[in-house]
Length: 159
Image (cartoon, rainbow, N blue to C red; front, side, top):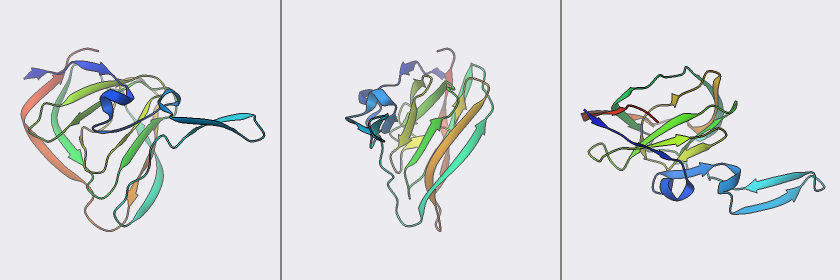
């Protein structure tokens, strides 16, 4: 088994796989609601093939490290976003392909991600209790979830 080092989640480091959803990642910020609110505009765009966008909530149980990574999934018909609602820290694991070395990112409190359509990723790895996540993804006809077992297993031993 090979160890994955956990990297800080930044927009630049994650760009190949999707978008970081956090105020500091915004390219455009402007006032709305008569100046009482700052809008961090278009942090990610929903990308769909057919179907329509849905907003859901997932309640994740916290994982303890070490955590073994032995599978990945992807959604070929739509992007998928995960946004923590309670400041939960979580680990984002992505890969260019099932044969490529995965990358692991620590999504600190308040950071969400949107995976590009077709990006290989591991299911949610919440680190803290109270892990409610807002999910924005595609629902509709067609097979939008592919899973693969990895030939090489990886482990996240520590942060």
